Image (cartoon, rainbow, N blue to C red; front, side, top):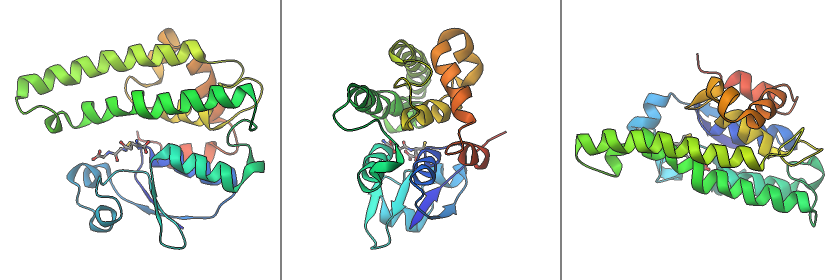
Length: 207
Ligand SMILES: N[C@@H](CCC(=O)N[C@@H](CS)C(=O)NCC(=O)O)C(=O)O
């Protein structure tokens, strides 16, 4: 299995999920500059969006979208505990907020990183970046209100904690969370130490 990866991106989410499930994989690492330039030809063939994470399964099938990777691993390795148990209230909480993170929060990074995709005018691009940043903060505060304790879904850690750990290293970054999303900050700090999470966090650290 091959994972296309770059430090500081969402490929860390897939790394954590694969590590958590105990599924072996290789990484093909690229730089953020290559990601921005859409210049990795094999990634482009596998995923026309040229986005990370992109996972190539052993049978050649391509799996993109971090949540799809998490759900697939949870299905194939049900005892690993990536998500709360089927049929539980905690699982509904996990599914709701996993989808919220990938469909509502995650796209704000795309608008912020690539405003030229959405508006041509440079002033409009600057406005989009600024409005995206404040919208992202408001969305993260909604996620903060939904967080349980000590983990996002309650008593047991899950991939939701890994999303919080990884996404809180992106703008507005951890220091903002201390004052503005303290529940998420506490979860991120705790999740950093989980053996399923710590190695990928170390590999993906961007100074
Ligand atoms: N919905 C996707 C979002 C993936 C995504 O936006 N990845 C970013 C890196 S964190 C990326 O590859 N951006 C490059 C681009 O959009 O061209 C997921 O959850 O996996």
